[in-house]
Length: 534
Image 1 (cartoon, one colour):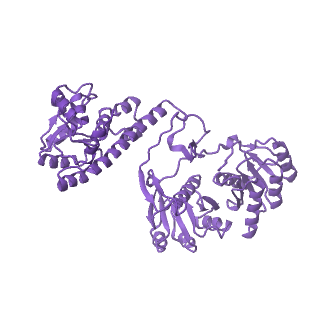
Image 2 (cartoon, helix red, strand yellow):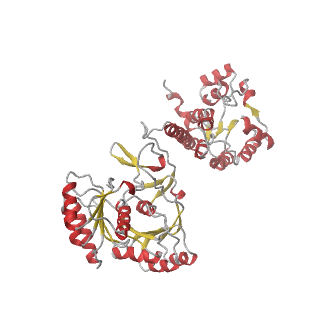
Image 3 (cartoon, one colour):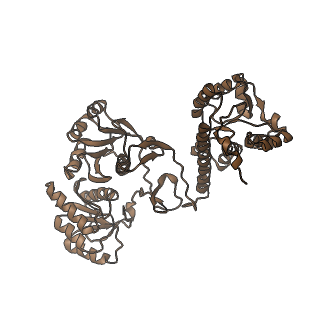
């Protein structure tokens, strides 16, 4: 059907004479309705919204008086009627439409103010049953919104209390709603209903226990535009609600790369809920030092000693309240970002002296899931990356290792110190880019090799960095994110001074690797789980 003769109407402002109002979120509504009534706008409303407006002294016509049909099925059917939708969808600048609604006794609406049942809030409550959840699936609301947004050339649709001030300002200044504003709100309306439908679809997917849905849907609100992406020539923005996880207490606005670094640091530090203090230092999303100590200051000093060059301009993340003494130690070098669950007031005052440093307070940590990665995948644990032509989605690697499943494959077994170091190294190596090698001694990373095409190369880099910092690898342990395909990696570790190895196992040459470890007097533990990070 061609509508070309109607296109000119999209440039016209719309005078508001009749409004349909039906909202779940009633914040600020009485003020808007009173202003509309003062302008002589006829208001039609439903149920609780109508009652609220009447209590506010606003003259309201009930929807049932317009439709001539009572609300039914506990209010499930209220506005689904030609007298309502004909009034919304009529093109009031198009004479055939005007002739038709006059013949049918339908009067047009110029303004539709509707927002939807709180479905997300309802399903977020742990005691919500499927019967309750489905009652909060709005039917009439999305239909009203979509109808009004479709007819944006002739109708204004408002879906959020945040739009009320702009609505009233437009009426005060122009006595009508300009097309540009209607078009903007129509877009927001379709986004609103799309987000709503996505939440319902994902809830049904969870209810059915789908591991990964046949169609992936995600709806994230734009939080803010960023100055640029990874590089100045790339545009970027941040979406979602990172502020639910952390807040910026001080410093410049976060950049694209800052967000990536914060995410990497947050995921590593969540491995160490305490009570032992842990500090980790990152550069370009990769740990360059991590350690645990009897105090936070000791943990920081040990982490920094791993690599005293890379931390300049890096990111520091700790798992305890930042005390003044540790803050003074960190302040000796320039750090781009510091993350901590809390800050001592004296420490915060000191660190704020550097204007460009971002200080982040961690509100909550990413979940570490106990048990094996099986069964239903929850949205909170999903990780997704764009690829050309689509996206890859997987469970984030946040599963707590089940040490009962670990296998000691050499005759020599780990003593208590070695075991603690092995567990620390295994928690760190999963956050290193593949091929990843981590040397640990006394709960301190003493050598880290990352992102190499050869596991031996990663080990050699870790050894070289340790020597550069004057750190001894004698008595250390080594963790590898994936199996050693040949015995040479284990031999290099022993030569460097390592006494124990933790790795997934699973190579066709496992027997050769184990045999080499036996000859070298090493402890070797298989975890049965790989931690690749591409």
